[in-house]
Length: 323
Image (cartoon, rainbow, N blue to C red; front, top):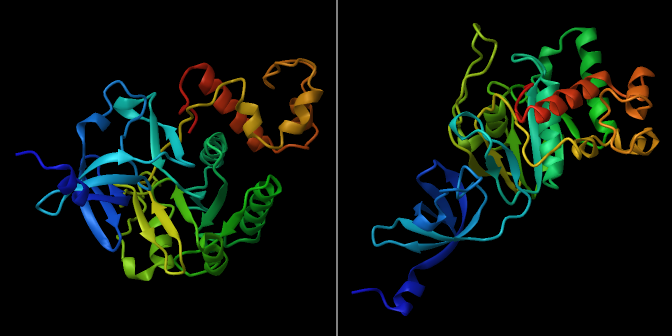
């Protein structure tokens, strides 16, 4: 016989998604952790998203007799980190984490080499979704020479001058961790970056009891190996939560077009009114105030190169070109 309304009500719970494997979801309900599936109506036939339920989602579920649950409702999301899906689902939106307060892009100073193009695409996508963002540079202990240290400080100053907080750390040696912990305290933050930059080591340092597995750098490719397979939400020892994410080879754009890309480069925005043409793309047009500022050394050439890489990718309809 079908359950009566009262018994159905008794089975209802509300929780937060801690981990998503694509078919099963770990949901925190109070102090309990419930393994859940998703009701069929949330499947994504015809949807422009790759995943129906994501880490950080606040969900309603019904308990089964065996202690598992079925997710039957998803609360409206606030501040998501999104990227363009790759592979077989290319062109769709892939929501990495939902209901987060701050997004941090993680790079290593070296091993693997720091990729400012990845950083800039991450920052654009965060701004596109009204999500405050910052940069964590790990493995600063590898900046052994005076020249390397100067380059590191110059890079940090550049992003800080644009309004992005920068944290220089060595998770392995504990350097810079106190300031980072203070930045994360009391918030739900997501960290994302390529494999091998030290995200898992970072999380183990922030919350030593987690004892998450870390990987090594491939000497053949110079890139990291995947250790985090699925996104997961972890409590921090000092208060707050951190979403650990799988290593990303690229951070494709979605929800951005040629017309609004410039507005996600804060240093470009004050110059736009001075361009000769109101629809200037800051690429080939004469009288472009942005190009003039680059030529005069007022804007960083690396940032302008990142902008052009994204612009050309958008023109090709491939937001992930130019990693």
